[in-house]
Amino acid sequence: MSLIIDGSKACLTALNHSAPKAALFSGSSNLKLTGCVVMSNSIAPDAIKLQGSASLQVDCLVSAGGVSLSNPVTTVCASPITQALPAADPFADLPAPPATNPCQNSNQSALQPGTYCRGLSLSGNVTLSPGVYVIQGGDFKANSNANISGEVSSFIWPVPPALA
Image (cartoon, rainbow, N blue to C red):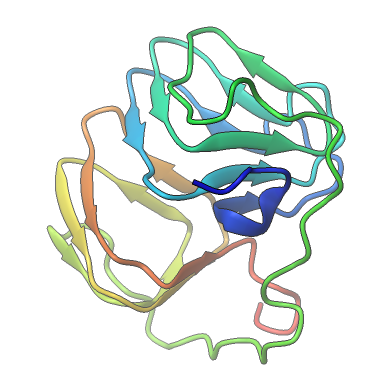
């Protein structure tokens, strides 16, 4: 196993540099991410926040700011890494994906890549097909009863101004 010292192995990266709760896990959600870290570029003291009865299993938590945990997090690293250097934007050198029209319907048990307007809120059993999911005009939310599976290439939100 390699030593985790930064967000280079991030599968979930909050790119905002100042937002509180940039990566928020709450309610009774249960998230297991294998082989990667959760990274926040925010310098807020609660840049990564776990609240309520949420549970999280991930290789490590890495934050440019702080971490606020109401419950223990199962990690491979000994403890969360705080005051880390921000991760590079993995999309900086890529062209923006085209926003599709019409917006995709998120009220289904199997979702396809594309543009989801007014956010993407998942409930129940949902399978995500491989590809890029553009979330426009809202947040990504996995509700407490959501059971999400699949291999997503990436989620992009908020949508860069060039796509809005």
